[in-house]
Structure formats: structure tokens, C-alpha cells
Amino acid sequence: MKQFSTIDILHSDNFYHLIVTPPFISSTYIITINTTTGQPLYSGHPLIDIFDSHSLAFNTILQNYHILERIETKGIIGIAKDDDNNIFLGLVEQTEPYGTLPGGHFIQKVTKVKFVNIVKNDNVKNNKENDNNEVKKKNVFEQFKLRGYHMFCETYDITRPYPSKMKEKYLEKL
Image 1: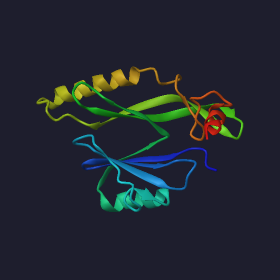
Image 2: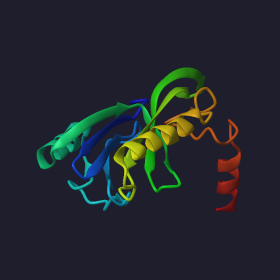
Image 3: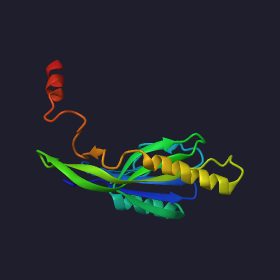
Image 4: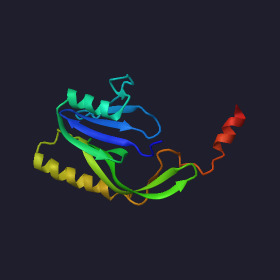
């Protein structure tokens, strides 16, 4: 079993396409974010946003859109919105091994995060002022204490104590 996700982000003229292949299943998903509205688009239809392989999903986007930028990342840590309705996507750029749970579940510690502005508010008149504000707001997000304080495991829920009795309690109710 593959232990880590494969994630590519492709930026086309009006969209960011998040191509995600989780480690524990064979399907690949595409979540498209409209850069004007910030609205995520996902319909759950095969060969539209669900594919059998990462390469098939990737090539479908390449064939149908003019790609301006490709971003490779280890993970998506979240989405944040600022006061001016700019939307930033938090990307995990670097991790380091933190531990292993029985069964081969690897725990990773986030060591580097990058924020990408995916929706820009065009209501601001002065572009230079808007760019300066964007840099300031991006810096505020980047100062948030995620590096070194956030751990994750792609194949096991580490938000519960290990071993968890939650499963046993759930089975008793059935």
C-alpha cells in the first residue's frame, strides 16, 4: 500500500485544479476552484472529476485547459480567507518523519508551509497597493504556528488515542 498522497495543483486561466490521489484508494479526484468566486467545483462523476489514475486525471486537465503554473505539494493544510475576500490555499511543502504506529502508519510533522493566493479581490483600485497588501496578508498567514506544531498520518486517524476504544464502543451499540 502506498503511504503518501500524490497531489498536483494546476493553475489555468480561471481555475485551480487540485489533483489528489489518496494513499489508501486507487481513485484520483479533481477538485476545481473558480479563481473569481472561490467556489469549489466537484460533481463526483467518473472521467470528470474521478479518475482511475493520477496520470489520466493530470493529462485530462492538460488537454482541456491552458496551464499557467504547476505546483507540486505534499499536502493541503487548509484554506484561509482574509478581510478583503482574498482566498489563500495553505500547502505543505516539507515534512519530516515523526513516528510510526503499529501496522506501518507513518506520522509526519509539517516543517514548511506555503500560502498561495487563489482568489484575488479585484475591487481594489490600485494594483501596486493590492500587491503590497497581498504580501502582508500572506506573511500573516505564514507566521501562523503550523511548522513544527502540526502532525498528520494519511492512513490512520491520529486525532484519537491509540489504540482507540472508539471502534469497540461503536460495535457494542450495533
